[in-house]
Length: 366
Image 1 (cartoon, rainbow, N blue to C red):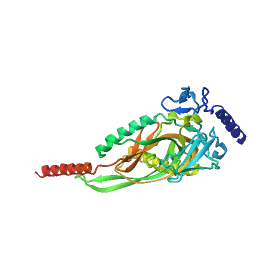
Image 2 (cartoon, one colour):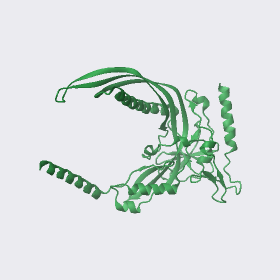
Image 3 (cartoon, rainbow, N blue to C red):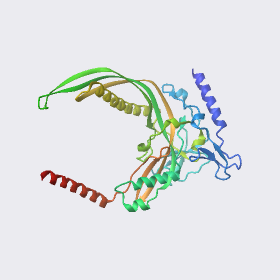
Image 4 (cartoon, rainbow, N blue to C red):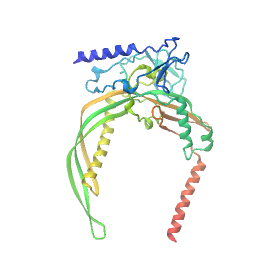
């Protein structure tokens, strides 16, 4: 079995190495991946090569969780280097030929190279950028203008600075789950006036099965931008098999949440999801008046995982000498961030609410 796995990894590695030369065949400059056209392009001579569409590429392989150490690939396809920021601790992976004088996470220039002596698994899949930096700026402006309590001056003058495109690390887990449960459901008895006089509590026991597909865990502890999780929803139908061409011209953060730690996080979120789904099912099936308690015990079988990179634009903007941060999903364009608040607008809104309540009270009394 191990021999077959090693042979498979060898074939993948050889195939990847055959297509990772990012030198332009016309002028020998470094070509970059262009999210606007989904192609490799040379900014110097205009050379362009279209990358495979989702229909033309094979599915990203689901790896057996228990056999992960036998199946993992350490080959990113090109030589890589890492930098770490002295200010925020963020660590990013670059092509060896790229220069990086600023931290992509906080913008600090206090960056230093670090040795990559760890056996860090290479990603198996990539969600490519579809939103360009110009589009991200446009979405930011639209988002800020939609903020009700943002000062008008901020809406008119603020522009996001230093938009940085990052491929961030995520684990996705699949599992067949089987849960045994005990639920207490209450049925009310009412008198002729409709008042509850007693509650008949009934106990229901059973088994609940559900297959969990692509439970996503953000695999970083170092990124300080608090809005990344809010925009980390991706369309995995567009997931592509990893190829270094996709991350050409972008920084990529390597995971700092390991496979096992990520699975522990996933199990918690899966358990909450199962509880919610089962609660809804019990309510629909038995129609209780009250839901007392629900105890569940879940077994996870046939666990598989993928390690993928997904695109995020992060940036900052300033208003009244204060810096605000934001994140934009590089595939869907979803925006999340912090925005300045106008105290005057808040006071006016509170005054309007108080006036409405006062008028309602007046008419009710009248």
